[in-house]
Image (cartoon, each protein chain N blue to C red):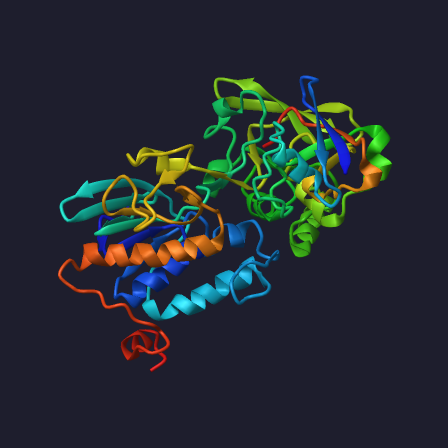
Length: 106
Length: 342
């Protein structure tokens, strides 16, 4: 079990509980978190589940792989902390993870 | 624009797996089909969103990629001689005596007895960058596709993106444009390496320029772009004057003209019955991800089942006097003849 927090652009926080093994995107969709469209359903093919990982969590979540980095080309306002939430697998180690939802998804 | 009308039994809107399998189920019942899709090839989401991704829930295929599934469906329906109209979007469906008239955005007209909407999540359309005010420039200074290269003659052109569309149009428009700049957020490209190589040669030769960054704001007036503010890779911003911008950020699904066809809709889905998968309009069916009914699951599997039942009902409309005898492909010589195996 991991608790993860999504911070909306207006500062509102949603903290949800997710089973280890789920992706961050699945945790968002399952809990109806606003701003995660996940149009392709987690195939790393659409970049509509874009999030910014809070700096203190960037080491734990790691860097995007090449395919994800390619797909981030299709996201808006990409920053060094940008990730696609469908590519972050939740583990016990990520309990407490905080990510920000971008102002705009495509 | 062609004024010839293509007459057929059924027009299928959408060449995704479910639209393709409808060709099979209708074909077994001697029903002829024309298939229309906005993409340039069959497969729908399977081809566009996940051609290389494995699918694990197609019966008897423990694992198959989106592209393999599409290719195998095309092989399976080949005997039925359906005709395909790619790069076309259905704009209008009108009721006429004895069926429907269907028109596409390129002017193709069809007359048919039955319409099958297998449009999945809707039409794939280019993604619009969420930049404030971008709508005002669309069609005059901002373009998501190139219809006529001439339109960019002697213009200062800015192309944004790092995929094949961005690179292909960089190479194609360079000889036409007055100046051309390619803007991309990083120095790696997902486009084909050969195109990237050619682009870099043009940069080295001083024929085009390449800049790193992302567009932040648009500037201009009266629908005429004058420049953009770019956030560079290091976080600083700079101004880039341009008359034209072509953003290439892939495709997204939009319901599109489906909403204009006078059908009952429920949250962008088309409600159908579960016997025939017919919509609120008699003779118009909806199958696959675009329909909704109690218990609906958006699975390719469900769409296949819906195709088979729809085909029975469509047959009754097209051949009202013919009695349909249920047959199996394993034992029926007439079905096997249609499949070309006897």
